[in-house]
Image (tube, rainbow, N blue to C red; front, side):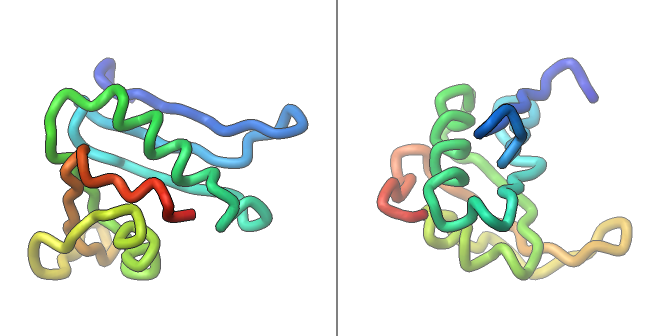
Length: 105
């Protein structure tokens, strides 16, 4: 990991239930929530906590295609064409920090 990465975890019963990584205070490198904890607000809380550490108003993510609907619920918008890197297909997205939809799960 590079020095300028922030990783946050959500724990329950001393087990990791979710993780988020913010690179350089501006880009989400990952957001994962254990299946049994999805749609229970874990991702929302992780995202909100990571945004508290963002150093820019617009935070970006290269979302896997299956995660695009979840990011849209958080207020992210598509910002370009679908791309591919290292064999992974992604949708570039961005969120204005003041537009986080806290009602999303």
